[in-house]
Length: 256
Image (tube, rainbow, N blue to C red; front, top):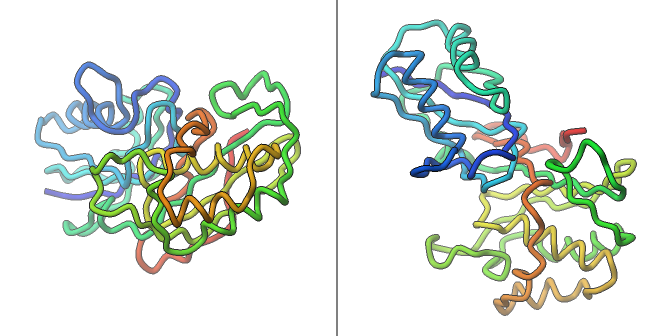
């Protein structure tokens, strides 16, 4: 079987997340369905670098596709996109070693979260409108506590599905971009709902309702308090996936 690295973007608004689910529309499910039609076989494997939740988007998700074919890569991309709905787009297709694995080989993931400071006619599915004034400097003070290798159990809803709740968080910055506040976060991997709970808690800090030092407390002693601050999925994007020998960048892309 040949193996290909797929880089894709998608609007997660109408999906129940990345992972295949029974009786639910998923990104992975749509890709598998399209691949079966394109290659005229049921023997296809599509595996993503990570599972995005319902309503979460991607600017640069990576998946691998394994299938028995000699079809040129340009044609694979074109034919897959012909079968996919408008809210999923394959950006590139690259041949890779049969040992390549989109999830296991990834060394870091970059997410961005978009917060709008105003009512936005185009951003309902892609931003979180926060009406409170946000102190970005104060948010960055809190964010600095999370950088490094820490136990992020307080920011997770894994319920024991992961072997460890320790994560190496390499970068976390809150940036003002016009009418938007963007949270950019890079880590080795992410726990379920981790980014949304970090963002929601940062908003509480920026609004003045939470002390930045609380972040240190939550790392030292697990707490369920961040769960009540979980940000909605609409503003969250998987921005990029990094693989060995790729330089991790603090530059990032956003939508709108």
